[in-house]
Length: 120
Length: 259
Image (cartoon, rainbow over all chains, first blue to last red; front, side, top):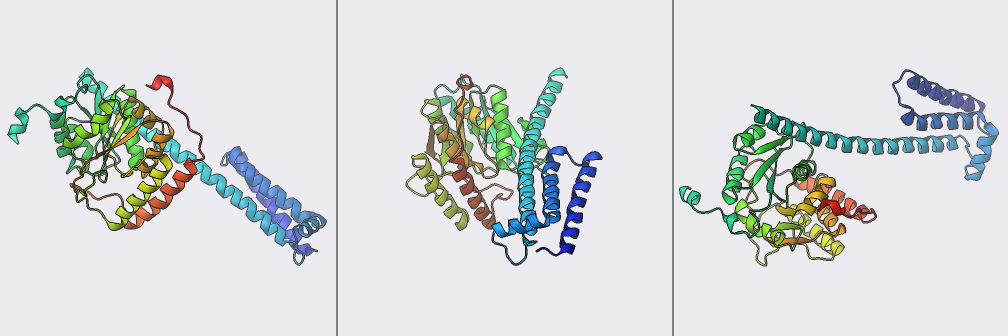
């Protein structure tokens, strides 16, 4: 069984994550679409930490016998990987869009210069 | 060279070229030393050829020098890498309605005098894209580059040849001529920082015809190659990844109207 103190601290920390994410959304420092994965992380970890018998059962399913809180680590790491991968896709999209903008800018500037020459 | 001014430009001998709107795309990064000569040689080859220099975020006077030598300049606000820079040129060519584009690097390694050979298959309607290859000729032309780079080029060439089912010898050459279909394809979609390899495969997947023409290339006139030994390994891995993932990508055939 998970030590009580681990459950308490785990729940508090995970819940704090949820609160921080919500506050970031409220103050418009985090967009909802990027917050969803973080919220899911916080909620799932809070639930697993607080629900002690549940964590025990799940640990049994996946073959973790000696120390059930290891499941918390595993789930946490999985979510972090998901968030990072998501960011990589976001960065890729942003850099594609950035290239497009730079190209458009160069083309428009050229047109503008040409127009200016024609008018002069 | 006063006597060259008297002779008709070499391009005049190419059938069908005069009726076409044609543009040379010259990507340049910190190439103020070589750009004037490249522009002059392009004019000597074909006075009717519009020239657009794509300045890929140079910190020297590349853009000013190019403009002073009669080229139009597309000045990128920051460095995009060769793929992004060249694509800017293709977008320009596409939007301005050019029928024909050639790509000649601003570092002077492509000799505009050899454009006639590169243009011919496209003018005859035998290819949508013609590529000047350093290795297509039987004999070596003495082209020198680092050993790692040569090996890289050879491996990529054999991988690409197998993928497209046609012998391709020089997948890294940027010395190219394209018709309207080729311009349209590259304006819409062009790979990033070591682009010619992927572009070659892309061309075949879109059912465009690519032909290689033997050319010789010169030593770089100035500046530094953007590809060093360690980097070529990195690019190699990256390009191979892009190639194999690309195999599983759905392709869109060029639209009818883009002809």
